[in-house]
Image 1 (tube, rainbow, N blue to C red):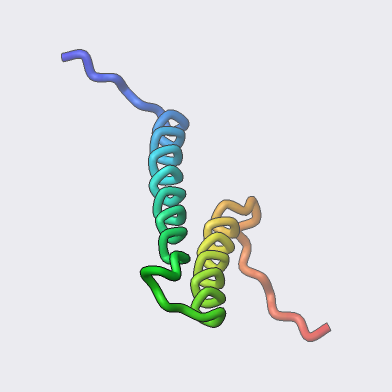
Image 2: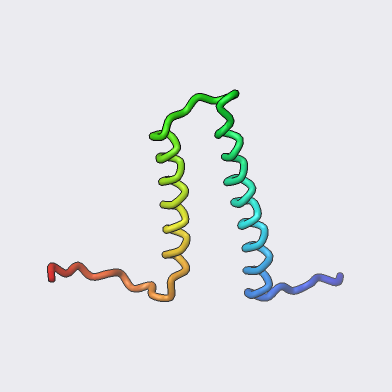
Length: 76
């Protein structure tokens, strides 16, 4: 048996590339919804979609931040 042993870095790269590509494709699929021949939408609908995407990006970004400390509540 000639199994390739994958270290943590290799695993991260493999999964990051795969998952990022899937996310990009899913986002690009939203472009089709802009076709007014097939769909009816308004600016509020678009704003909701964009907000959901931006919120998800913010969650991903914060999960990678170096500081894993909980922010302490301060009044000042």
